[in-house]
Image (cartoon, rainbow, N blue to C red; front, side):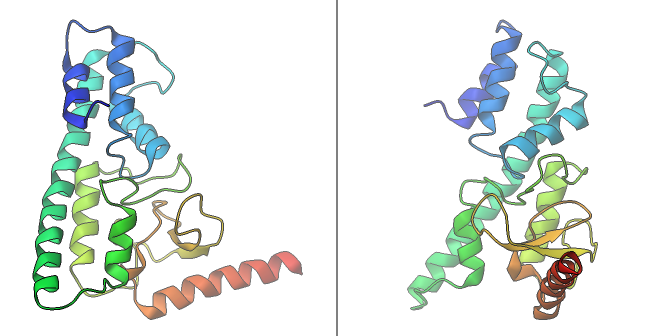
Amino acid sequence: MAGFRSLARQVRDPRGDLALRRYSLRKCLERFAPYGHRATWDHLCARHGIEPEDRAPDPGRLIRALEELEEARAVWLAYETGFAERRRREKHDGLRRPGAFDDWHRRTWGGYGIAHCDDPGVHPSAPLAEVLGRLIAALGAKPGAGCPVCTGTGIVWRQDLDREPWAGPVCTGCGIVVPRPVLTAGALTRARGALTRKLTASAA
């Protein structure tokens, strides 16, 4: 199975068939897709003027989309290196049991769904590397009341997410499933309260 860098070379190959180069970019998303496969593809297409179903898109647009993906992947790989080093230190010091933060990281290992967007058509508009930088900064800071990506406070609790965890806080502004460790207990309570009010209103 081809790795990310091998697929990236195929996207850049000027002798390659355009349909194959597009296919290789889509395959890159099986190795690294911060918003999930479909939402990351929708994001790249929107930012770089690629028609999602175009089988022979402009090669310059494909390469620019790949470059954005590579920049974000470099940010994430640097973060994962630091995370692995921290865990080694903690294990050396006798801290074997991972906490809630590490549980979130386990589900995003490899870079899939780091800032998962449950609705593929609703995702942040900023460059992927910028979004990941904001998220990583929030993971290293004290919990806050708003979304670490768009700073919005419109966060609602969803119980029907399409991947693990099957329930969690979702930002109504940029669409990401907000990692629980970056939110205060109060923000999580308000998100759950918004769901309760919605269910009560629906039943009325």
